Image 1 (cartoon, rainbow, N blue to C red):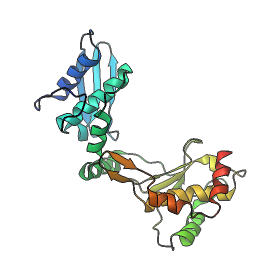
Image 2: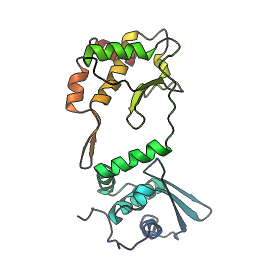
Image 3: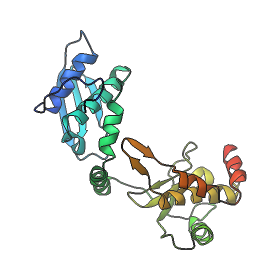
Image 4: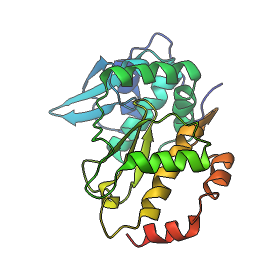
Length: 238
């Protein structure tokens, strides 16, 4: 299937040749700089791009560097469009996501993250709240005591925009330290931890190019939390 907005490609094109060709399409009238592609098992699959001193340096994840030509071409359009602050032609984002959502690709990427990625986990005891007993209470009340406990911890910084997250690669639930204060009601901490426990129960749903983090089942079960609306209002006031 030809992705809309993609020029005809050659299966023999190198990554450097793909980036050079698309650079010429985006930066019409400008000379194409020397292009160097560095391939490593990076944790970041999107890669990085830097233009300086007449050289374009592209850092590519080995997972993408060996992908089919249309996928590599789509990534080149994504990175170069960001570099030049141009609107991304339709189809490229979906092409990239569809490849990354393939089961075998996700599995390989997860293994790379486990090997290369570093994860700071402080431990469950904070200055005010200990996540261990809270997890045990929630597990017994909402999950029949059958949920295996992941690593629990508090974030290094005081994040306001991300109150919690579940890292499936390192099997860890991390809550923001903004919740670990005496002025924060325990109900708010319980709700955020419960929300992340649901992510442990309901994995991300991958369907084609779509990636659904909060599935229908997730949302239904989230509302079973006692004090759901009250906890949401508490968090809004933080």
